[in-house]
Image 1 (cartoon, rainbow, N blue to C red):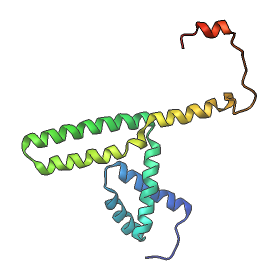
Image 2 (image 1 turned 90 degrees about the vertical axis):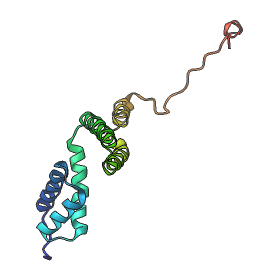
Image 3 (image 1 turned 45 degrees about the horizontal axis):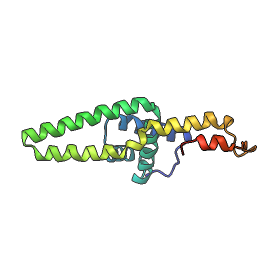
Image 4 (image 1 turned 120 degrees about the vertical axis):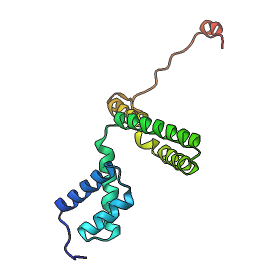
Length: 150
C-alpha cells in the first residue's frame, strides 16, 4: 500500500471507473476487489469509490428511463422464475425470486411521483400564501344555510 494520497482528479476517475463497472453489471464486491488491487488501496477505500460510483450511475440515468429499465428487468426476472419452475430448476427459481425482492427494495430510487412532488413544490413555492395574509370571512344568511343539504 502506498502512502501517497490521490488527487481530486484521481479520486473522481476512480469513482467514474467504479460507476462504469457497476453499469456493466459487475457485482459490487468484484468492483471493490478490482479497484483495491489496481490502485493499491484498502477495501474500505474501494468500497467508498463503489458507493459514490453507484450514486453517480443512478444520477446518470433519467427517472423515466430508470422506471422503464426497472419494469423491463422486473418482467424478465418474472419470466426467468417461471421458466426455472417449469424446468424444475429450483436453484434458478430461488435466485430469480431473490433478485425480484432486491428490485422491490429499489422502488424508492425510481419513484417518479416523489420527483414530481419535489419539482411541483419548488415551482409552486412562489405562488403559495405561506401563512401570509388573512382568511376572507363571509357570513352566510339563514336562507342559504337552510337550502344547503348538509
